[in-house]
Image 1 (cartoon, rainbow, N blue to C red):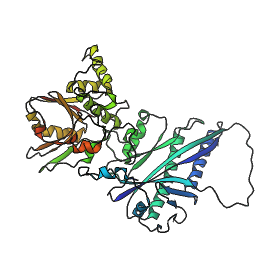
Image 2: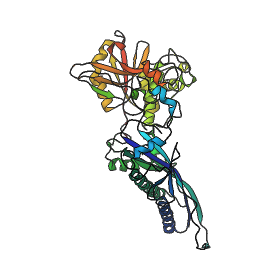
Image 3: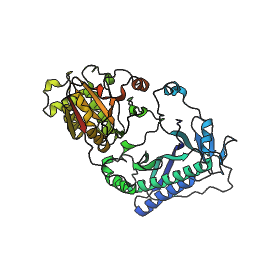
Image 4: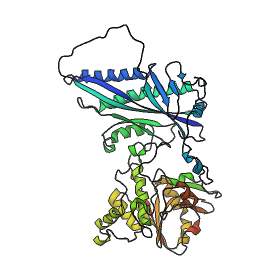
Length: 466
């Protein structure tokens, strides 16, 4: 469980339902009816008294369809759902670091994880078993359905309301899975339906969409177009690709990179100013990662990797973040560098970053130039407009240093500005607290820049696609 001060709790139930049926390949209508009847049986199972929720990291068992029963006498159907938190063991491993002064923001909403179980023992029946024989060829199908339902509710909502909402969500998800299975069925070949949760703009709670396993995002364009219309989403950027899936705060990123360290900062107090930030998720790439010793020459490479991670995690591209060697080879391929450049320790700048983004990702960029660092204070309007419309990280190179700009706070009336900087020159481990405390990700004033050096800024542009 991950707990925050938010007034809402996300209840998440996960489990496997086994889909079983026998298909008559010679009768299309009969096969479709058989599939639907099997799904109807699963819906009935979810609504049965045998359904049990077990609360992770606790001894709690809840029977949601039996006039609400739990394994704890003090928890009743009238109890506030927030009361369940006191029975769940919390992860104390992060308590020390999370209490430090500068880690001012919590890690996300409170999530209560539950598992889906069924009682398998029932009173003996007096009915005799029925046997029947089927002649002719039939195809036996057995497929696991990975149920994953979420419900976001205020902490004062009753447990009875939560249980009812979760059971309804489970039943709806089974029905949605039936629709996907039938839509993508080819004879007796069925694709496993997989649920994905998305946090959409202006939506209350999370939105769950079922996609068929094995079907690439590129083949689901028309599905997403329908969903964008249904949820009234903009038609120029992805919201419902698999890469856009909501990341639950209790799930660890397997690649080891930190995501969005700036989210743990509070903006500075600048009078009459507005905040303009990068939109979406990126990974923090810096010196000495990936077993590459690039200390002193690889800062622009790392800034480029951070930008590439943004396009990857927003679903624009599915290619991996390029290595130093792949970046160098891309510059050779476009004719910008000689073949001997590959494997070297030579610097790159904003123009090379622009070329690589175009070559490897098909992303175009604008270049902004200032002849002196002191002029960056006058670029508030352009940077604010970039973060408001494009929302991508910006690479800036000047002198012998490169940085990533993640946002600005800027006053249109006074011209005051602060820059949110992600510094690729960090050489330590992925310790969020150190990175925040030491300013490797932090707000900087105009004096941060070399006042006499010229700077080029690479401003990547979003592709207009969903």
